[in-house]
Figure 1: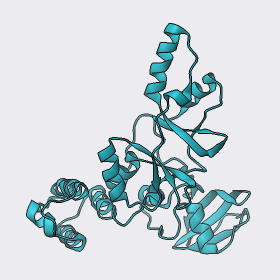
Figure 2 (figure 1 turned 60 degrees about the vertical axis):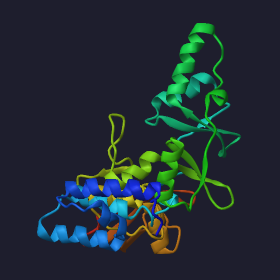
Figure 3 (figure 1 turned 45 degrees about the horizontal axis):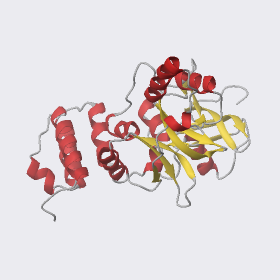
Figure 4 (figure 1 turned 90 degrees about the horizontal axis):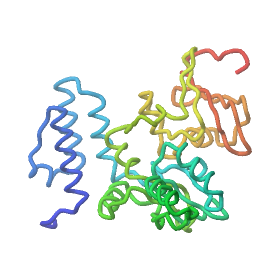
Length: 295
């Protein structure tokens, strides 16, 4: 064992110590150095048996333990749902798009959404607009944008977290083994795996999920399974699929038609809307409930 621990190990151990203290359990630095994942899980479970834990703290610790097991592809925002800017749009369209977006950073593309040529920070755009008022020069988004950073979709979250901290950047474009753009990942995406949703005044609570008066849940097909599990306390598997639409396709072994329904993992899934080969809207309810007329 190396005498000098890596940045990811030191960082994770520090966060683990803090979260364990919040849960009422303290481990010494020496224990953390030599403890493996199973040891820490055992310590946490022992504490849970002693008293009722706070579920939020337990979720945070579970997120920490999973950083090495999860890959960037598990938490990225897929290219089909990511918000991006067309470099050839008029300046007024780009400014309006940035102002209407809840995100601080947005990828910039040209000719194709898969051809990412930069990443625009809202602050850089606003600073440029202030300068434009002074000298009347046109806004050139490509010149303002920062160079994109491309990362493999197979990178572990632990390694990606360390890379974000080392580079002091918050945003990366995710590509597959062929160099094709798959989506984007941010530092916040990884931190949310540890601490849960990081909401601000511009965030929409559990975007793409809505509870109906009859107790059923309306879900956009692009909603990540992990987000749905956290929001509703469910335990749908996410090993074979990332999104809820992907889970339905994986379990049914086909591309369902609208109004088709399936039952698995204790839930009833009804496909409400499909666009081409994409499931875009579903209704989910407990499997034991009787379906409403027309479903």
